[in-house]
Length: 122
Image (tube, rainbow, N blue to C red):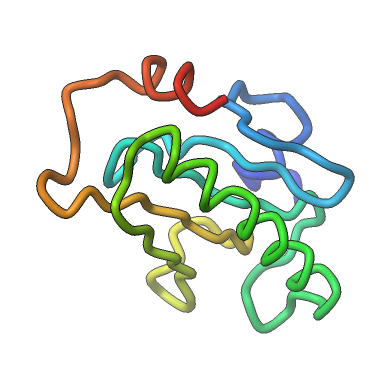
């Protein structure tokens, strides 16, 4: 999809802070994070929403998330982590993606910049 911001990020047309990449997905930092370390798991294939994701791709996304969760929690000393998938009108970008949002249980966001957090978790 030519006008999809996530497709442009995946193609390298828009810069991003990549944490992980393989042949099926890329994990990037959210540019408007809810907490330090908020990342997005994006399938490289443009899939408009959750109901259209192939089961094998969904399984792979979950496997990548399972790798990312302990990494994020250890590096950022998070106490918990929330998985979020928006669907329908709450889906701002019509390209399926999984949010991984670390939870610190005391404060939601520090004064660290996106670059500082990226250096910790990359």
